[in-house]
Image: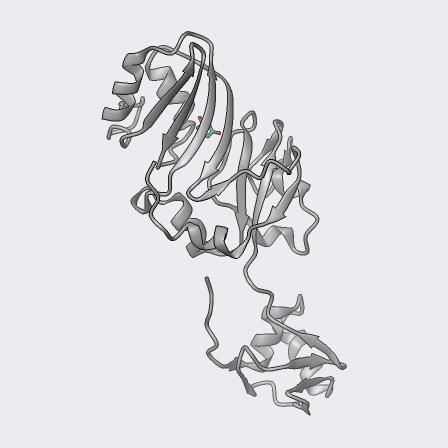
Length: 242
Ligand code: URA
């Protein structure tokens, strides 16, 4: 999370908290419309701390804090900034500057469930980096019966086509013949589908329920989203067991 309060130049500050370019910010400052802590400032290089009260014609401008959202992704949406053929998860958001958000751990177009979106790169790295051991739980339905030996194989790690290393140890909880929950702490391309493929099985439905300490909110209908609580945001930095 960005807690920095290092002073920065006023023109740079304005460009970071508004949609003005640096050159437009300079013009605004020179026009005398900007005040800092109640005093008009016309010096573009004025040093301003990020907790100062900066106003534009009397209206307060505050740096927007980082955003952390959870979305219940429906099928048919892709986890990308834009796509020529499909709608993207950003199309489901009613947010200012949605293009500044990115997905922390993508899902395939036909996978449903928990998607996290943020503009905080360090936070999304904590969600996605295998070294950070942030466990994800997937609900899986399969075409063929799930064999008990698959549990042992996933625990040991399996080789996926074109990958050099085995998958990291994963936990498979068999719910019934064709249904299971799989907990993994990495996010290789189509990982869950490829893991079951390596066992001669095929995934027919895939739904993400949990990421680290964050469970998909049962009150969110498909396509709905909400802001994460502070505890949910912080939970990503705590090591979770599978
Ligand atoms: N593994 C997959 O195969 N697909 C997803 O969408 C997520 C994990």
